[in-house]
Length: 227
Image (cartoon, rainbow, N blue to C red):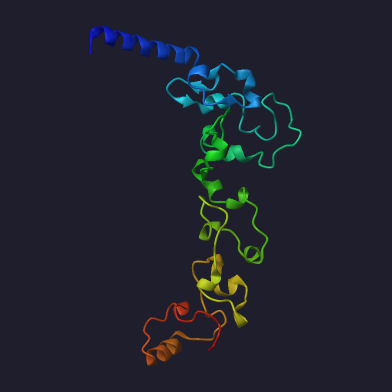
């Protein structure tokens, strides 16, 4: 490569760099600003920091976490306050772009990103019901706390659980969850809540049949059907 060509290439790169800073809204814009941010049109560095992207510290100069959902950025009460007005105060770190974008472009964040529960404070993350309303179906009315036994934070709905795959609740086994699952622990169960067995009796009866593993009843007894 000749020295002249190198010089031309260097000049072009410098021109592109200068234009990117001077006219960033024309050179690298990902899309139009949302309506509420139209007054910032052309002022990229109102939100962006050179070589670092969007800086959450700049976001909260206008959007105070304690006011989000209650007040506008001008400090005026919202006509319809959001039900999750206190949500942003429970975040352990300010990472606005994890959920929001002020550009309405082809890669708009709201339609392509999912909320990361790791952003929440530990004590809030452990209490799902601080944000989620418990379902009111028959099963959930009996269950209190520890949603993680069935749900994952990466996919709250739908949670697919089929009790019949473990044990069919037929005949006399249509009982309250606490009958088999003690101390609100649904990873463990006992059949002794109803069945008047003793460990010695169970051992002797099963050993007569050549069965030595009898601590997990549902491995063999899949339902209440005696047949």
